[in-house]
Structures are given as structure tokens and as C-alpha cells.
Amino acid sequence: MNMRMAGGMMGLWLLSSAVAAETLDARLQWLQRVALGTPVSGVIAEVAAVPGLRVQKGGVLLRLDTRPLQARVSGLEAERSARVADRDEARRERDRTQELYERTLLADHDLELAKIALASAEAAFKTTEARLTQARWELEHSQIRAPFDAWVVRRNAEPGQTVISNLQAKPLVVVARAGVMLARAEVDAGRVASLTPGQAVSVSVAGQSYRGRLQRIALEPGDDGRYAVDVRFDTGGQLLRAGLPARIELP
Image (cartoon, rainbow, N blue to C red; front, side, top):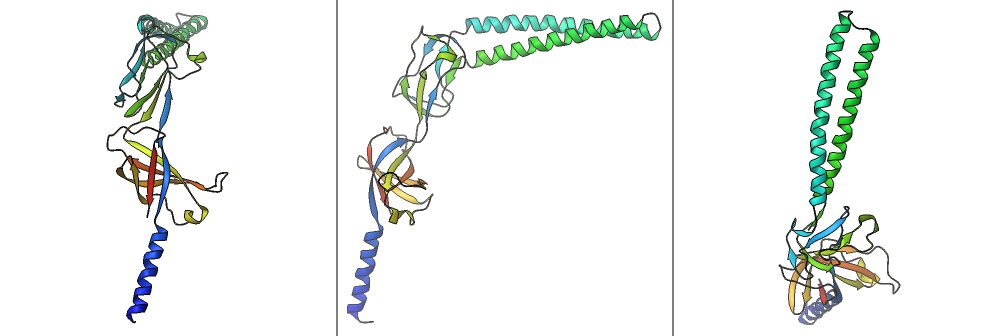
């Protein structure tokens, strides 16, 4: 192979590499954005959520006044104790009646009444137990906690505000997952075949470069005939806002 041919092949390789590499204009998106509310009605006692604040998973964002809920739980716990005593007494009475019946000292009717009384006591106990379980669940869900490490995006609640769970039109708090974001761009149909989910790419935001991976490649084109691609990348703990411009460096 002469030098001229070798040089021509090298130039062709460089040209094909330059064509393969591509930089895409993109916009940042939240990886996960969640609107939060409470299934329990009540009066808001505390709102710890502040837009722009980073919160840890499990951190309390909002809390209702729990006094009415706690009072209901306490009342049902006392009622449960009484139902347990009634059930145990009915069980002892049934056993005593059964013994006397077997000794032919009581009639069938007496034994049947004792069994009915025990069944009624057991049913009353189960009903109270179910109401207590529901009351404890409502008490537990009287506060909103962060489902993951997150940024508080929006707050639609204030202390003293009354929450009616089945009439709440707006979410009380909106959060977005912290630490990870998406860069969304579009590619031509001819470029889609060369892309693979999980492929390593680079994302640049405001002059800062981040390592990412292709997470999603659309199966259908948009109205302009191009395909949406999403790149997931770790922000390294930095706050990046949805909607910011970014650039994706495809290999």
C-alpha cells in the first residue's frame, strides 16, 4: 500500500468518525416528579416543605393536627379492651353451658343461646378491631413524607388550612427526585438505529460535563419526524433545574 492510498484511507476514517459523532441540543427534565396529598381530612398544623429545599427520604413535609385522630384511636383502643372482655366472658359462658348440657342439666335451647352470645361478642370485637386499624392508618397518613431524596418543587398548603381529602383539587406538595435528571433531545430517523439503551454518553450543562446513559429511545417519531431520546445522568448532588438547556454528546 503506497503512502497516497494510506493517507486517503486515513482521511476517509476520520471523515466517517466525524459524521458518526453528533452533538444534540437538549432540555433537562425531572427523572421523577410526584404530586403528594393526604387521604385524610383535617386541619394543617405544620408545613415544612419550602420550594427549592432538598429533603431526605422519609422527611416530614406536612403534618395535620392529629389531636382528633389520636382521640379516636384512644377511644377505640378502650372499646377494644371492653370487647375483648365481653368475648372472653361469652366464651367462658359457652364452655360452662356446654359442660352443663353434656351433663343433661340444660336444654338444647340454652346451649344455642350461649353459642349465639359468643358469636355476637366475637363479631363486635372484630368490628372494633377493624375500626381501630382504620383509625391507626389515618393517624399514620396524617402527615406527608418525602418518598425519596427530593427537591421541593411546589407547595400549595399553609398552616391552618382545612384539607378535605375527597375534594382536594390541587396536590399539597410537589417534589422531584434529587441527584438524578434526564436530558431530552431529538434525533433523525437515520440516527436511531445506531443508538442503544444503556449506551454511555456525555451531557453538558452550563459548561459542566456529566456522564450519563441513554435510558429511552422513542419507538414512534414526533410530528416533525424525529425521535425523542432521554439520557439519565447523575448530577453529583448539584441543583439543576428542569427546562435548562443542555447538550448531549453522542459517540
